[in-house]
Length: 632
Ligand code: AMP
View 1: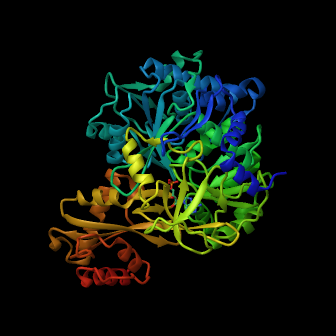
View 2: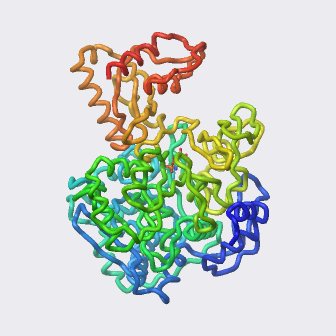
View 3: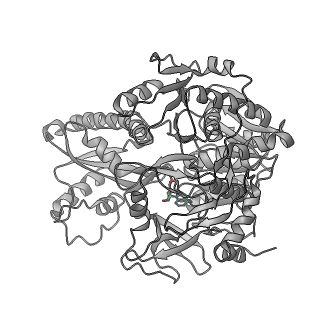
């Protein structure tokens, strides 16, 4: 058996041979002629000359050998539905959806925006898109009209696939009115809207634009739509994520590199075998949902559970009952979900046999030690932290137990994953930090391995400027996370270097929230910061300067205005982005050159020392924040 150190070393120093070997885990229609074209850094093109198809690898290729085995297991504790699709049934459903998309005019390279709850049709739509070479752009169902409109304008979809409603905690959450509003707001108008009617919420149809899925499905029951063989470098999808500026970035992913990266990760990291069951509790609107609800497990020939509902409804044992029922071998969740479970009756975890689980993988936000210890004890199964980003599509740091069983360390996601040349860089000098316990920016020397983002959708310049130019004197990919390394080569993540916050594992840009709050007619200026929270990891806290302070000069008026501002955020961005508090100040802490002192505000909110304040314009401004937070 190779040691992990050798495996990782080989992935970087015998890169092409290493990845050519991994590429055998997927089917190619035409073999590639070059493993990695890095002639135009920082852009990397993987498996050049090869043609393949993601849907073929996820679905078609399994039909002859495991057509009758479970592929997609849909469980909704919201609508009390449980429906299992075999690979053969999934194959048929995806072809029906592909035929419908074709009928609506979708061709290779076109974009299809998917704005859907966690229902099987969402997965059919994603798979159908890549089947015909169209790009999907899934927008998380928790986002509201303004967020959705900005994504429609950027992706310019020909078709939007949506549904009447989702459901959360037994409450129907209509989608269609938000979609209609978004289309009204957007400059780009999709030609068609394909509506899955779940019968949850009646909705208005726009004649000539809106089509119902059910009759079209009937019409295409026997559809046979062959996979379109696309170049390995053909984009498979875009997925929007937040950064420092208000405008979300369309992370663009390729086809061949992504297929290989996921197939390899299922083997080396997630320990998945064909015929087994994978359960990721994420949502298809996030990158984990793309990689580890839909594509990764299916590419590996595994069944994947798609779960609509809360982790504690009908009770805190629901997830573990699914683990037992479907003999789940790999499970993927987020620390926030575990913290939610931790508040419930611990007996829930003992009610079911979870011995089928090889491991529970956790990602998306820092895994604190008490949470890790609690779940490890309660579950009695290994807990594997893994650190990555929407941009990379699969883990950057973890323990690759499929290669060598290395010990985990509390607080660390692990070591650099094969393919990633991870460095710690001094943010001011650009020098590499090689010693233990030195804090630096976690950066990756190019080329990024297969599966990572190719570019920012339609904006190569932004890709280069944002990710590869933030460290002085070096063209190196910045993760925008701080990290330190210990003597054994384990990395620890210490939080973001930019204005991105992480609320319950959801990545949000504070600038987006600020822009939304600023649209309230009484807000002159606002600062939003992420503040540590015992349950959600972080929450957003807003401090606003009012045009008419008289509207908040009593506690009652302030509370009313706070509610009205939160409603603006709910309506524009969605409840996920709603700040936990909006407090009113007369001035914001800024430097003399007018830069907002966000880090100082954050420190004060967290009860920490705000650090060097020699450049502050008005020290009284920070005192106002202190007084408000102290009075919390
Ligand atoms: P997203 O693009 O939504 O997946 O968010 C990526 C960001 O989440 C990273 O840049 C980190 O700040 C944070 N993150 C993800 N996984 C972890 C982890 N295992 N430990 C600490 N932070 C994490």
